[in-house]
Image (cartoon, rainbow, N blue to C red; front, side, top):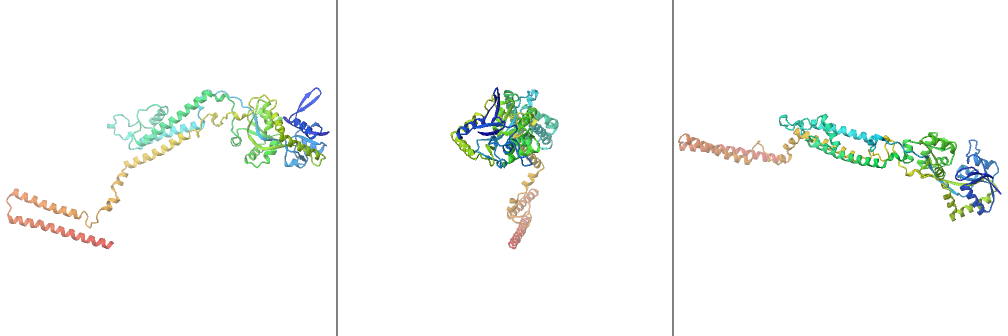
Length: 519
């Protein structure tokens, strides 16, 4: 008859009071019965008050492990996590069970309806702020364009302003324009300049995108009423570490503490540091459950997943949440140096056989939430309520409206460029560029005398002949001209023309010589 020491630890070891004494049941009890049958040994169960134990500063061990080491016992049975420290005082069997680490937290309760705040629920507080900021900036942009653009109504002379539109885009009327278009209403005048029209069109399209999003989201909120559903304030472990919307704790020297403290995974190390820095340690499971229930949803515990699921299925005010962290392996332990080495080998063989036949897995599944009647103990299906602005998980934030805000911003840049071009055009900058044409100037022939060229000299000769004809006509109208006078006048005209031809030829030769010298 072997003496087996253990501790009460649901769902592994649980006691039920009966008339003839306490009857124990659980995963470990069923496993011990199967192992006793396979390995052919008898045992008696001895329950010790306390926990599995840990090493004290003076190197002694507390709890079940300390009892097994100091008080003669053949075997320590239970969900004893295999660690390096425990392996120094216990010889472990083959692992019969494993579990990750998960959150156990109070089940959230539905909140009261938002009332009049339902009209603001489609967008978060930051989204509303950006919408108001956009409204102000667009109004100011229209006012500045109406004041400084040379193409706007204010530049129309008063006598030509039959529509009385010169003051349509003052500061007050600019705000009125954005308000009216925000509600898809018309306005008496539209901007006259191209830059003003770019701003107006972009604001119309922006309001269309925002109003469609608002209407669709408000319809979804009214039809689904998410505030009537329980919701969490975080999505994952990273949200807890970043937002600190909820405190998390662990049992000091418990399985979760031992697993996360020795982990190399960054997230698991951060979670352990979070608990340690905030001193969120509890001494026992009962203390942790009491703290959770009194925290109104602001405290959760990291514990082995298998045990957390059992508690959530039997306590309907609790749920599990999050993916599994790490992996804890459980085994039975023999005191180091004991005479039970032969029994340990038989038990190892029996565990391997039960694993191969699937009986070990059947026991694990049987006690996973066995006897619980709570609906939906897993909180992974619950919606998430954002803390920002009190919005629900369906509220739209700046990221959801990023396309609309980006479109408005880019159109604002385009309008700024257009009004700059309008001002430059008004000041004649582009007209000056058109007057100075470098290619046309380079195409002109090289002249030494300003305004003279060969075609122009020919035209001068024709002009002189024309002047001579005109003089003769005037002379004829004034009286008869003598033949000698006519010949004399003709000779004078020809002399003048020949002199001008000689000057042009001399100038041309000088230009050729200059070009040769330059070459």
